[in-house]
Image (cartoon, rainbow over all chains, first blue to last red; front, top):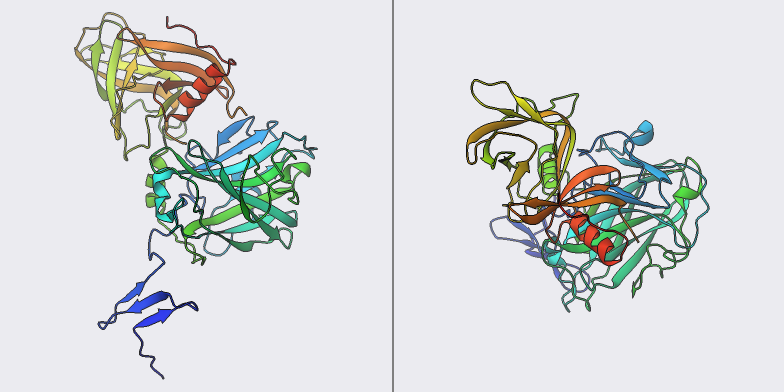
Length: 382
Length: 59
């Protein structure tokens, strides 16, 4: 046995990296010990929208927080654990992209997979200042195609122009490979700092020349999503591109993937999207909510969320509609879609109005429940 | 580029004011609040300003 007695470990340029206190406590100077990974659902566990394959006819959110765009539409599918291959060690889920044809890209075509950050979640980068920090992106990738691929990070805030195109190489077909890319901080442009658009991490799945001519591994302005040497998944029928363990963290070192519990990850996802009800589980008929009559034909009910949403959500209602119940009377139905007003959103709750009734009392109290809904969802995604 | 296919957009009036838009977005009917920062509302307004979408008056 041997003992090393030091109070500081520095990097090769003399910056403190690890500090050790006289009581044995340890501090990592540049690397957070928790909450390092700024990607939500990087392990691809959460799929509130379902586990069937998504085919983006234009665009669609797929697994929670992962947004796919296909132009022209339907050139690939996205599905949790597509192809049912064994995930990398330590993971049970992955996001699987599968090409639907051998498509020849036109100049303006683009096929992409996005992760979209709120501006306020990336302010720790200090981008746009002289103190801008490097970030490191790491992930596991498995593709049937070998060769060069790329992703970009770009400033999606209003007025943003900067983007960095980073390449990575798949060396062996149909084999999980771990990739890391460090991106130098941007010192010149203002990046988002509120609940609107911040940075977008965009993986290129097949992009024509108009958007696919970025300079590799460099900051630049423009509209490019990929680099000229990239493989195109959508150009080979049945080609696959599977990804999991996506981590984006401050610093120039890729640390091990920060696993979080399913419950914690689901709650984080729900800030952006919440789905209730499924015909196979519960169509909502027993979920009564107190409601107030508004005139003779409308009721208004308050719906509480488990977390605070990013912004006022879009409401999607699929199924029969709503039941109105009051003592001593049979339930009556409305097939109207729930709507809302711009000042009826309170972060963790929303007031909705359901029309289509008759003979109600203004300001009278009623109970309202979903009637055979297969979906009631609230979308606050970016 | 259009990230969404939007059709059948119509205002919903609540207490006499336009407060919401019902629209079919990528094939699914949605109730979109008139709130900046909501991605569907922002895209509806972008397409309206581009002249490619018209919102019908409330019933």
